[in-house]
Image (cartoon, rainbow, N blue to C red):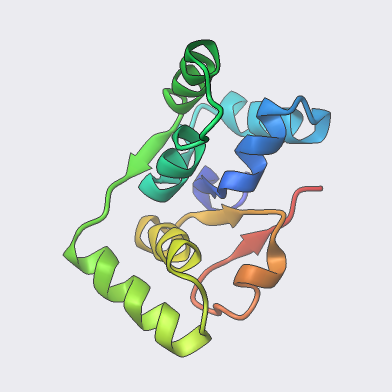
Length: 129
């Protein structure tokens, strides 16, 4: 797979998978089959686990899904880069952290929300479906 097989998934792709969107599941499985553990930002973990109507069973399903990913934690470098992206491209805090996480790991960002990231030239973005 492209970019040495390094991919960072945006939250929207994981939500689609949890909603049984076949194309999302197929793409995640394709990346996982390449034997490279994909990445997510800690922001995606927060977003997935903060649903107000989440019951115990759903939380367990999400946590099992999250075990398949390396979680990029927020550190000083990521915070500063995120702030730079936010100022330069006028994007939201969550999107700037996700983009900075992809940049830091040298990973391709996988998102359906191309409009949120298309102007951030420092990262490579793919929309898989």
